[in-house]
Image (tube, rainbow, N blue to C red; front, side, top):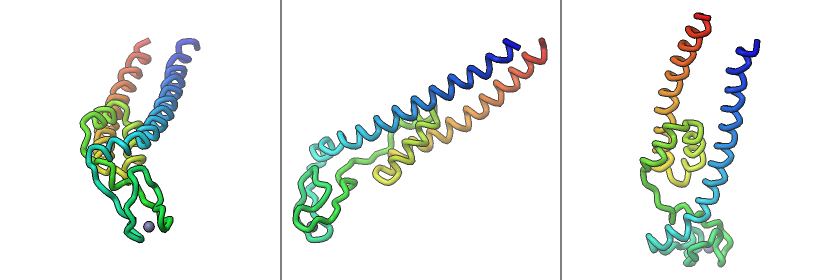
Length: 143
Ligand SMILES: [Zn+2]
């Protein structure tokens, strides 16, 4: 019976690792979202105005000081396809998928890269898992 316990514990370790990776990815993504604003403001130098009353807004402003209307910072963030996140999504599809969900509104191009990588990685991983399952079945069957 001991031999049959091993695949189960492997799955448990994989599950725990995935949860840890997901938590780290989400917190890292949130930290980056906050850090990204000054960088984008420096690079673009774009001046923003309130869409409600036309008052000029500060780089870090999230609400208009004159009328209180919300001023989303999405216009100041740069968006571009990212090979790095596509590769990340390919190797860890669940992280790529989560990044896609987190970014799809603010940076659709970057989100698309992570999402495509995740999709391709998911398909490749599924094929690999099926191949692994067939191999394991063949191994167990041979005992
Ligand atoms: Zn305003």
